[in-house]
Length: 163
Image (cartoon, rainbow, N blue to C red):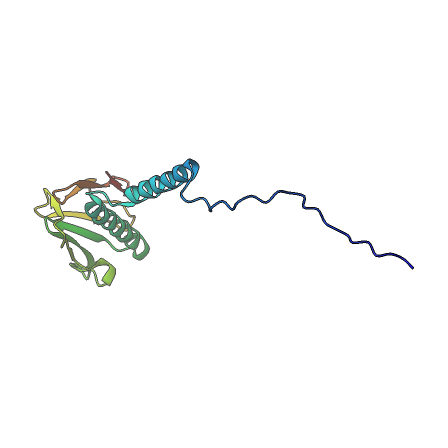
């Protein structure tokens, strides 16, 4: 008969006392967090509107409408005029030998409601003929006390916003 032999396992390591889980952050982790916060705050600062953004928006809107009026004059082969005054602007079209307010809602009279004013505009009038050329070149300066922007109309009919 065979004899049973007891198999014993020997431990391969010596048990040590349990260490508590480390609390806190490493220096690298802290630097990464500070870097990400700085990056996020820089993005927020860059996205803030500048002090003259309202006057810039008004100038871009005016320039876009002037360019659209020029294009409309060419497409309809009918003169269109833009008039400006300190508080706003409007468009007129020639019908039956008379100047009348433009019938399209996109060209209705506009008054600035956010403090924007047109400088030196007692009552200016620029006429675009059927070829899209203006009666004269012009520079329209818009200001709101915090900033200013210029809308320029060249002798060839190009409309641009500066500043």
